[in-house]
Amino acid sequence: VSMNTIDRDVVIVGAGATGLTAARALVREGHSVIVLEARDRIGGRLWTDSIDGQMFEIGGQWVSPDQTALIDTLAELGLETYSRYREGESVYVSKDGVARRFTGDIFPAGAATEAEITRLIAVLDELVAELDLEAPWEHPRATEFDRISYRAWLESQSADAEAIDNIALFVAEAMLTKPAHSFSLLQALLMAASAGSFSNLVDSDFILDKRVVGGLQQVPLVMAEALGDDVVRLSQPVRRIEWNAAGATVTSDELTVTAKHVIVAVPPNLYDRIDYVPALPRLRQQMQQHSSLGLVIKVHATYATPFWRTAGLSGTAFSPYQIVHEAYDNTNHGEERGTLVGFVSGERADELFALDPADRKRRILESLATYYGDEALTPAVYYESDWASEEWTRGAYAASFDLGGLTRYGALQLEPVGPIQFGSSDLAAAGYQHVDGAIRVGQRLASTIIEATKG
Ligand code: FDA
Image 1 (tube, protein in one colour):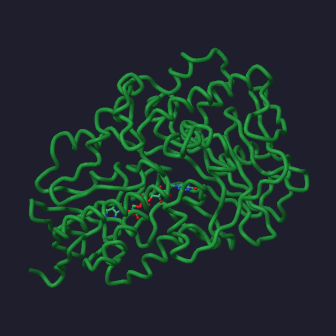
Image 2 (cartoon, protein in one colour; image 1 turned 180 degrees about the horizontal axis):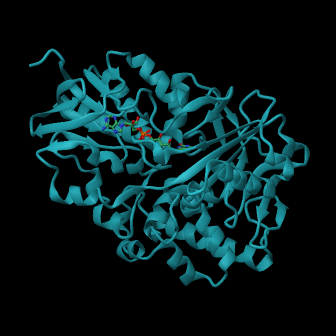
Image 3 (cartoon, rainbow, N blue to C red; image 1 turned 120 degrees about the horizontal axis):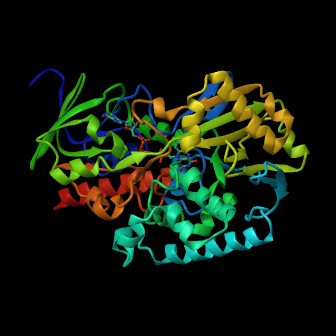
């Protein structure tokens, strides 16, 4: 036994919201815990940072009213929220490139298309209501829904291309950040069900309701602070887990930890960064090859003032035809400068990443100018978050299955392997792909261990 061997009840891999929630719950029940984090910072996909003196939410930031696990956690940690600015009119840009102002949820795409969008939302709401959120693969038509792409299914439901492009956007560009042809209808229904309904996904005032004063990264930061440096160890990428029925030995570059239980609290696309000895069972090794992260560039642009407000605009803007498919007023609490946030998703992100940085910035700002006018072209501070380059994330926002993957592996992904449990926001039911889901999964994994050891 080397000097650096530590013995604990539970080893947790990853100091994101999932891992730290689990650690907190276990420590509260008297279990000894260590959290090994690969990065030199806490929080994973939550990262509040200062760029040229301007505070930005580089990762997750919004809180919606259904996210009660997150809301309860914020209250417990003493963190305050504030509402996203939303007064005034929103902007929609149709295929013709013309910006049109509107209020409410349905884009001004012409009476026939607006009626078709409303009809498709109702059809999707009905399907979503039939789904068991905890086990979507058990829906009587799950196999059928999992073998058709979301886009192909939409095309089978409607002949209105603009309605289809808009209904596709709410799940594809805006949530899974993958092309609508690359994931199934069932995966789309799960995404909507995890937010309560398809109508909720369409309602940006619901989905993007509140932010945290000082930034959402404070959730993991405050949790880690309370756990202390003895529990949370940074710059400790876990390389190897040797396991048997009785426990495991987990090694990072510097530490070796023996424990009865392991929680691997990383997104599924990173499971394979760890060597398992013995190797994981056959089907799990297969499963891990069918779940992947989406890709989105989150862009921040800060201006001397929120100039769009004086023009009567809320800052909310959408278009399936624009490089920036959605954008919002993202002005920080109590600031005079105005900040816009926009998103470039999927294959458009590929296209822009192929450009040099100056051209990419120009194309993105031109897209913002289509929504807000030419003042958008000259921000004081500009930043593009690039999660796909981050070794310990490799995409944004989160993971989803390819066609057919959810019915084939959805139940299996929740099963432990010997003493090892796996979890992240990307395995959540309610709050799937969100911090709320990370907290729910972290609580569930901790309870499993707490219950098992009560015996
Ligand atoms: P997360 O990925 O955060 O944590 C995993 C941790 O494990 C990381 O710290 C990683 O470094 C570490 N790790 C990985 N491999 C390791 C290894 N081998 N050894 C040790 N450590 C290892 N959500 C939301 O609710 N509202 C929002 O507005 C947004 N918006 C948003 C924007 C952007 C740009 C992103 C990227 C994400 C969001 N999200 C979001 C999603 C939200 O950020 C995400 O769901 C949770 O933060 C995920 O928390 P987890 O702990 O599950 O994973």
